[in-house]
Image 1 (cartoon, helix red, strand yellow):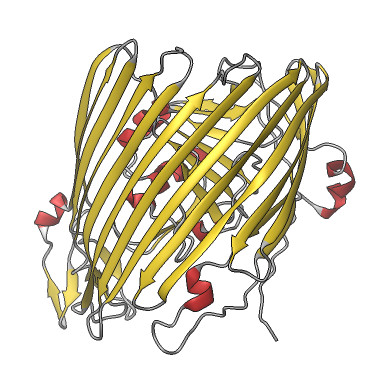
Image 2: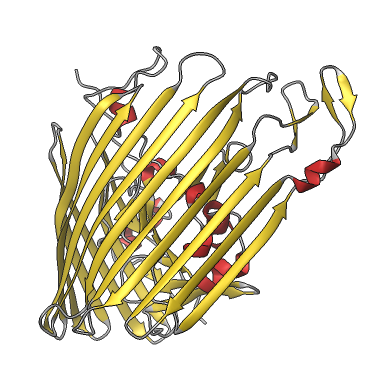
Amino acid sequence: MALFTRKVTHNFAALGMIGFILWFPFALNAEEAEDDTLPLMEGEGLTVTGSAETTQQMKVVTKEEIERRNASDLATLLQETLNLGVTRYGGYGNRVGINLRGFDSARIAFLIDGVPVNSPMGNDFDVSQLDLNAVERIEVTPGGSDTKYNVSGALGGVVNIITIKKQKTGLRLGGSVSNTSAMPGKYEKDGSTRSSRWEDLLDAQNYSFFTGFGAEKYSWSAGIFANRAANHFLYTNYEGKISRKENNEVWDTGVSGSYIRNLPDDYSKLIISGDVYYGDKNFPTSGLHTSLFGTQTDFSTRQNIMLDMPRAGRDDLAAEASLSHTWQSLEYEPPAGNSSLHNQHLITAINRWTWYPLARLTLRSGWDYRFNYLDSTDIGDRSRHDGGLYLTAEYKAHKTFLIIPSVKAAFSGPSEQPVTPVPKLGFLWTPLELLTIKNNYYRSFKYPDFEDLYWAGDGQTQGNPDLKPEDGWGGGLGRLPAL
């Protein structure tokens, strides 16, 4: 008998409210902004926005908020601005997990500039490899309710990280240097009490520099960052004694850049972007024997070329197309045993169209395709094709009422279930100027990753090649404060 996993989610507030949800979940918001986003919450040093003309509860962290927060990484930023759950497995450079509506990072779809970047090996994404100075804004759609970026793994939701924006006219320069540490104290080692290590006040440093230039027809931006983290913090060990973390040092660096060029029609743009990351990390074993540690080397590079056509030959037609390649390499040398090497390649092609045939009707369609290839000492040579076709209609039956039905035929192969239909239905009603009522129903899914299917690394656990996709149905209920 083939084993399988199937997960059904219902994101309803309470069973007693199902009848109300079947009519309209609601959200309060303010007047529309120029970019179709509205303030969700404002306070001292905090501005997060939400989308107006959508049935989804999208939240946006702006560039201004990113700069004000000066967070050490993406996980910290999302925790501080959107209250997302974050689980850390050590200091800087160690694994960080993000939780969205109770789902971990492997069940959240991460995108960079609209392109999926989850690893085919474990379906996760290392958020520490991003330079926040290169991020223009972050769009978070909880609950797998997104229609435009309807990809595998969006059970908990979608996190779209936008890194590309045309620079203002002129030259822009910036940089920062920061130090992070915990207060040193006495600790125990080898049966004796050790004095405070005051050099730990210089425990972790971040260096970053960015620049950009804008002209009438083109603009470019570039950035570089580097981190050194000793991770020598104090903690309570299994014996209840205060210990000092050792052999968990991390050095990493990365560069990123983008170039935007207006095409002769003055509407379309050619956008080229990419980044490179390198990390050298030590990971001590768990328990008391932290003198035993493994080493890990991370390398990744991403290249993306995009054509943005707000006017594709006629006034009522818009299009965008992109082609990207990502190479991720991870090599781990354990304290004892054989080393492991994992090379992953992802090639992604996306084409989206928007047609405005009537004043009240908008049709959106498109396709996406991704080729996943993995060469792993623990999993072997594996490859997979996935993607899909979608069609979405946005019909404004009245100036206060919008209905959005959508369906996508998602495919993955080789697989016993090559095609998965993914329907969605959303409503938006604005009976009053300061009141918007939203309702959204959706299906979300996740194809098994290569670890789920083929893992055989330690000889004791192994994957199941007969696993079927995880499947979820949900509905959204949200409330945004009126201003």
